[in-house]
Length: 269
Length: 269
DNA sequence: TTGCTCCTCACGTCACGTGAGGTGGC
DNA sequence: TTGCTCCTCACGTCACGTGAGGTGGC
Image: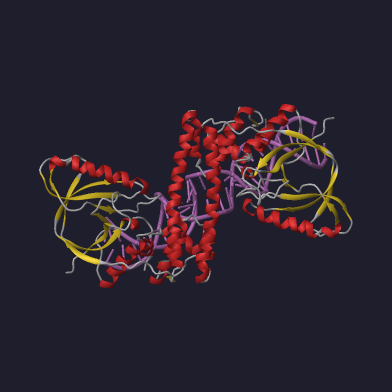
């Protein structure tokens, strides 16, 4: 079957089929060396149609290649996994749309109560990682255990753990992100992944968040409010945003306060 | 404010900001002619953040440009309209995933009953149009009325109306598509958009569809079955797929048969 | 002098679409 | 000879990311 006929029967374009050959995704059964003509066979039609359908889901060719190569039994699961990811994105975007609607319709943004507090000098143990938004929960749980497990060397874990967002953590940006825990002292060598440092005394602005507000863009007004406060008071921030976890967010009610967003400030000289 | 500071405060990249300037989407307040340095002002932050959020929805820059230029009151509506479109796509894709799951898990595809019938020579009045999947319902309703309204010249509209899909009609392909109606005779000049032609006698294969099957990919097995039938019987098709509407699909139950898919065949000589 | 931020090309990415210019058999 | 299908570049699209190479003020 020539490329034209194959294209028609699979509803793929000849151009796409040539690309798929180059990518090693779907190679013609036979290529005549003198003319370069591609010939496809009847039993390639099913694969080609599968490719077409996966492309309709906007699945990248790299993933499609993996799926075609996977054993029969795994293909359905691979599609499910991909689609679950797409649906997760949809959920995020839907909440962004809701937020935008409210904002563009000039509805009142929730009032934000910005406060300031002093943090004395302290030692913190930290684990840092590059990861995407969807993996934060797992990281948080794991690292938390990890810090506890590293316990023999860490004396008196005390105070709330907090996250420092050195870079954006979202669908398409992977931080880095650091989980910190104030500690009293270090008495034994720790695992490499755990770093301990002394944080100087400083002030920080903060805003409380309920569990329901713990996602983007629900926390946007809080961020905006802190930024405005800093400008307005003529202060200067000395680091990226933090999230101070003082309640187990899995067990909390939607409206219960579970964490603070905070920004460290340069001291007034 | 330099591009770097503006980029940080809006969470857009400098590169993106330069692109937005070139597109006329978001121009710096002031550009120093000697150095080419861009300077942004405080009151551009809100627009820039709006652009960022719309981009998170994967909205193309061309649409974003229109939204930024629109009056305040229309912006929310424009976002809604865009998002409604995205959700429509999601619905289609979701049903494609369900279909794929069934197929990849080796579940039985529904049995398809392929039949053949003879169509005698007949006159048909036709309206043709280029349009996308989402507009088909409106086209169908409008054109239907249009054919009726053109009535003075069309004697005895009879037999079921049918659609001919000359090209793919989907999210990203726009046909063309033709709405046809068999007529007894033409007694007066018609509007230009209505064409009348004589269709020669021919056979056609057909498959009944319920209302629930009237979407892609639910109708895929029916298409496959017709194709296999044609090959197996050694027949040759003489035109693209048609959809013969014999029931008002808006009032029908989900499991009620509402139309046939059919393919015209070359006569046996 | 080194470092920092800014600048302008220019090329890469992704999955193709769309010519341009040429070939081979009816 | 014309028309049809196939071929291989090569460039365009979209929204950027990522150097390369250079500038200007501390």
